[in-house]
Length: 379
Image 1: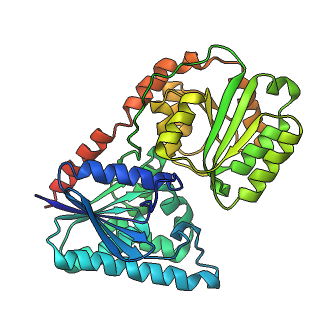
Image 2 (image 1 turned 180 degrees about the horizontal axis):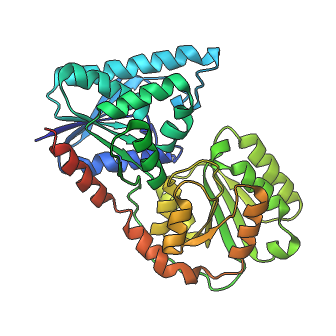
């Protein structure tokens, strides 16, 4: 049986829903393990090995309690945690390839996973591939030295994937090589068929990190700008998740509640709870500043829930192609409010056909098939 090593910095330590991207990686790893032997190398609280599932091993390496995505290279206080995590990750990958025969390495994402894969693959003559996120190219790619590292990793890999159409083009421009689009999506169990509302008041939901990139502050500002006539068309707004902007979110929600607005703040949701939210909601709010295709978008499609979103990444293309919601004209609270008012005048049922068609394009089984077909070419 072929042995695939999957390196990632996004693999949840619990099932509390705090790592949406990690939830996708779990589903991916488990689906791959139905076809090949899989070893996942991922950060943890301590070094350990989990072989609780057939053909699937989780090799944890000890890392900072704070995710790498929240550690800043320009902050000297973060340097020790960054270096410790980077060294531990590389050592863990090295340990796996030294102890077992490995046919291919798949790096999620380009940095730091792809960097570890590149160095170890070269040393042991093991082919490797990368799967890029927007944060790889659009955030880290702005740092001159890091940009050169990204470029070298992408140029030496066998295959490069990206989880967005625009991101795919940006990877190709950076690397000078072909990149393939491959969406990141979760495997959802949807227990009941959604009952779509036909008239207001409507139920609105946000689920994601409370982070600047995710635009949760723009969401709070937009809700504050809605008029009394708008709120009469809203039954409830649920804001779920967590992150560095928690104080701002809770303060804004408290102000709205004091004005009598039906706003509810919840923490992170498990996958099952996320499905319940999306089956409850009439519309999902995606106010992101930076995005390719967020996991919440594909989750919403599978749960037949149209969206209100900012014009970022591939969301304009997908929303227009499949007619699955309303797009803000620009990335500001002013234009997001206009989009909200537009959606409050529409019945979710008008989006039903497009939602079903769009959901079909985010099938995890097809993604696994593509990955295995590509990696088998280089063994």
